[in-house]
Image 1 (spheres, rainbow, N blue to C red):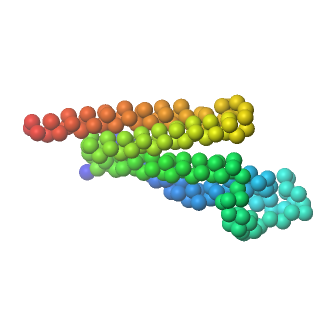
Image 2: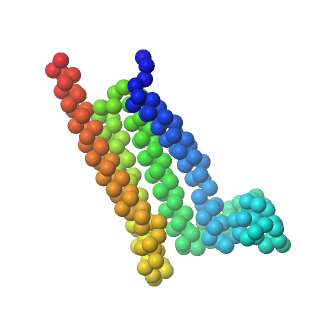
Image 3: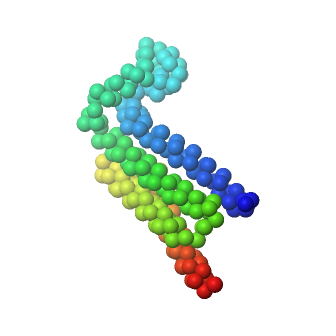
Length: 195
């Protein structure tokens, strides 16, 4: 059977979502390393370009293995509170976005199978709603923590504050879509019974 235009689009979207999902999973283990390195004042340009480049002093020679060793030896307990909170926030958001992407793949699978109006899609979108609300709540908690930590209103103008309404609205959209898919699945089931 030949695919419809919607199924072709769903196939392309599934490829893009899968690539994003895999990249998300590959980057998650690097989050603690990168946040510890960036908050320690370590010159990241030395990692990327070697010593003697712009932004790195010429007498410093850093190897990525040395940096990894220093981070692993220092342990999580030696991280500054800001770095620890940032790392935990980014890891939590990374896991939640991976779960959202997985739910999106499941919805796209039903579209590819030709059964988009099923109860499973409503459940997937409800799960995506939960993860969106969790990210929004975590961002709000981090903004409040940051305001208390720096004792300034500057965190109100950061990307974290943008996460709060953005993921809250994404959660509401997923909730509406979940209700629509549930209603469509019920109507389809009623139509199947009457024929």
